[in-house]
Image (tube, rainbow, N blue to C red; front, side, top):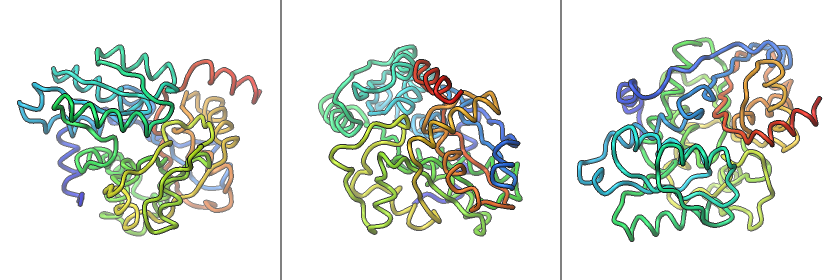
Length: 322
């Protein structure tokens, strides 16, 4: 299991590769809930996503033999960009498998870092299955986007930064896909200040972690998941994933946000904060929109996990809201 010491070590490991991102007070969100809301702007991170934190912590641990063979991974987009960037930076090869429906902006982001890109399957789960097959076939290390202690520890550095800069925080809201981000943050926060509430948010279109925690076991995704602009939160949690047990132990609650609220949040963050964020990154603000009274009078940190939104989608959201 990942411990606070692992996250502190990860912070040292990645210091030369990941940014210390801003934590800014949001006037509109604060007024919305009648509290004090701060946004942790991981959309301003390297590759415009928190993913480089865990990825560099993992890649820096590779042996010379593993580096020589290269790595392979599956991604909805942001993890793939981080692995491609990290491999380029550290000087070895990476093969990235993404679903055919991945946003073009994320596909282009992977390509620009020189990784070998394979588009496969309609869903993330199909891409992940293919990537694991290739790892065995090519003798390469498979880098999980979430089910890896070093990945989780790297992502936990977000929690260290929030607590250091905002020690009065009452609630931390985190987008949830496979659970690597919230797992790391929850361990970092709860290990130092157990009274802080850690809340996860998923899209109603893909509520796998939400339903798994309710069931007390990892459940498969719905056979036909609905389209969502929060594609970074889509997909299964693989059997035996460490993130599920971490969530059971450290996360207070995982809840859901509707698609229309996520779209509205993308627009409001742009209108009020001039921050371009993707659907996944806006999901925490979407949760505030739907639960204004739940956070009244509290100091809330919302993790804005990424900013890689398709420009055409972004324009359509802004046009529809204005």
